[in-house]
Image 1 (cartoon, one colour):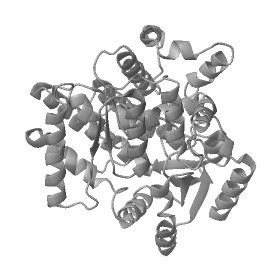
Image 2 (tube, rainbow, N blue to C red):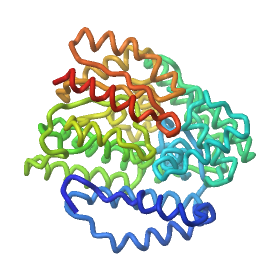
Image 3 (tube, rainbow, N blue to C red):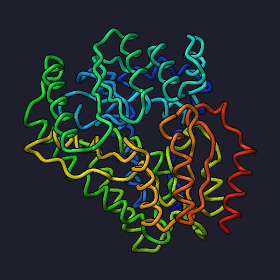
Length: 425
């Protein structure tokens, strides 16, 4: 195993599913128990320990969800997972499941299922794919659904439809548009009101809340340390891998596996920096990546990072934008975290974040991946282009789709990437 490439089990899984009816195995909790057992034979090298932590978290999450070990709570990815862990539930993000399905080459199948049920192709493919999976009853059955309306209106509506498919309760946390002391107090009270509303299904215990919040705060320190190490020259971690592990960022916060992952990753990156081991040899340019990546098999990020030696030094979705959550007021702390998200509220907040990150990570250019159907992200492109132009930072808006490979135009995308990087040189 070389220093620069990690084991990718997805390639083996894709090959296996081409020859077997995989769907009958996906919903078996025994499948994940077996994967957990087999992982004991995986002895990762010094530079890969975090990958096992990520894998074990996924296995444990799916084993519990399909095995009905605790109440399963569906939510959108910017609903804090730690809130659900603290209340005794299992947070399950269908949008993340869509990304996993795409990485395994399964997304088109589920997209066609949703489209066959008259869900428009104009809708976000994260939601269409997840709806196809829900219609085929592939996903763990939710006991209730909790959505937040910040960042993505489509997610709240998609989750309401999903709750109807499964016949379970649906709750919406309405997040104020602006961040202020009054907004934080209002949202904190709404969180506590929701806790009381769902207490029969999620009987939150104070000791469990305290344990989860302690995990969150300790993990946050390691996340900040990881991000600081990524400022090093040359870059110690490929952005393509960071974007793959973003599911841990959203789903594992508040768990022991999440803490273990970031602790291991900090050690890995610290070792790389100390030994002068770059994520990509002969790095020529540093880039900041905005929004998510295409999760289906495609050569885009390898073309950028390996082909052109332009490493993705950082991604806006990996920024730690929140402060520690106080044990004495966990609802207030989580409300503050939700409202502190610079991707929510006036677009100027996102513009400021991008400029701050571009300076902090000393990037040569910024690429925005404009995911089809994402009004929230693509709606601020004009402001981003204008502001970065004033700062003298080159900007590329790259049209694409994170989940649907049918919308990926390899030749056109490669040409635009090559032209942009040639301009940087």
